[in-house]
Image 1: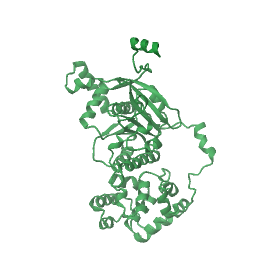
Image 2: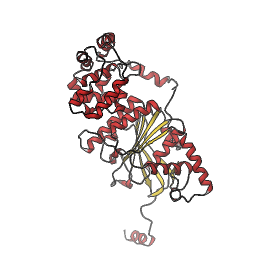
Image 3: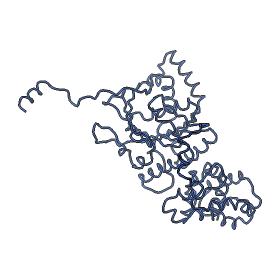
Image 4: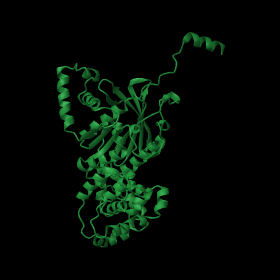
Length: 439
């Protein structure tokens, strides 16, 4: 009954969900599959409406997989968990009965997390009375159509008569054509793909710096690079100092002044970088929820997808990555956070001019479906100073190719002109004259 008590309490008071996610409660801590599925949906924010403390059961039900929907039957079954919980709680505070979880092999980590959660819960002296007072709201959640059903014309109103956003997500890159694409991307997921060594991490860090400089809170999960490497790149990009000479500390007085100024600037930005390699995807989501509330983080960047650990679920790696992509999409829409996710491409592209396509994302085909925007980076004519940024997928927009000029020493990316196409072979006049004569 402890699992039912946890879920029922969160149905009645959704603000507890974030606390429990931050404290480490994950789907694998539940024993039954249907409870695992419901907690997973709730922890992603589906069914959590800011205007009410109670779970929107129809919205949560829609977030379940088809198999889980069949097992639950209807949104009403989710709401009925509160009836089961009221029997077991018998007028007590909704304490999450952590000892029951420990008795069913959920170990000390969850026990301690739930004890802390219990201390934070606002105490309700009479559980039955609380349920009676909420009866009207619970009944409204039983409606199959849910409160999200609207007449179609209502959906057109904010498009034709947009209200001024009080605190819009502002994303900047220092590249005008990118910035034009990055308008109105709250809750969107942008994937940036490239083969190793093309510079996707450097592009992402430039976007992170420019976005934080515009006042938007940014969290970067740099799973690939160390703290030292991230610090070095920050100095390199912000102070515009040659990275090789910076590593060897062969910088002049002017560059030293720029480095100090860069440190002062970055220290004042709402830019946060996590380099831990051992965090699971569920733990990362818990971090993001906390940062959204405490640091007003609105943009999250992950470097890179194939390095994320999937937690305790036993899937193949391809299935794990597909599952992570789906969860990122759901989480972004539920929280309004904009995600930039870097991803590796297959090394052997085997297509015309070696130009990557959406099908070349490594180990998963889910990105092609989940991405709101997909950007593929590749070198032009094998020139490290010229990059093609192919906006290969733009939901609600057109695809576009944007050329970038790169300063390798400082990892600075600027918008450039389309280069001339190099011929595959220079004409050998003697051979070609001979060939023309006898052809």
